[in-house]
Image 1 (cartoon, rainbow, N blue to C red):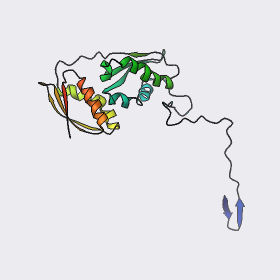
Image 2: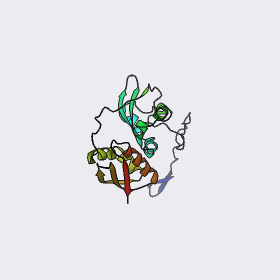
Image 3: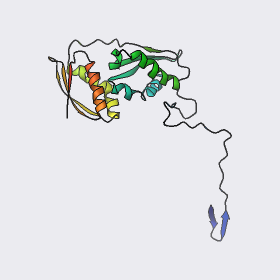
Image 4: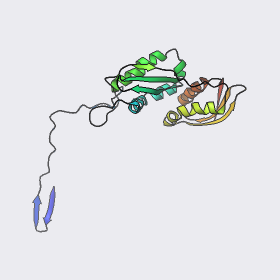
Length: 197
């Protein structure tokens, strides 16, 4: 490059070359099955409830498309045990143990090499005694962020406790609609879900 310091004098300046690294950095393909998330310092993620939840974000769309989800109930930083609740259809699915071990645990182990046990827990919240708008809204709130991320718009239109029917205005991908239907049918006292445009 050329810089002018005096109108009559032109000084040539050599461009500095970046020092050559002795070791090449490992390149992780964005198409790899489950790339490790990093903090930027090469150390990986710190082990806490927030980072465990962040890692689980990569598999939530798959769970939600099947009408379920997962929530982090507790993380023991000493033992590095993770206590998770499978929600919606995943909680009552006969394959939930396989989902926990082959999917969720695998992704966590890839991101946290010293992971202890992944333990499935049940939520101790009181179950509803009848179908109400609040019960349905609670379920919609639980899955809303993932549905929005997957391009869906949802509005609760009606709850009929007599017949156990929920009416939803829905716009979005069919697989998200199917997942939402499964999640709502897993709510106690919901017998039918009707979607309108």
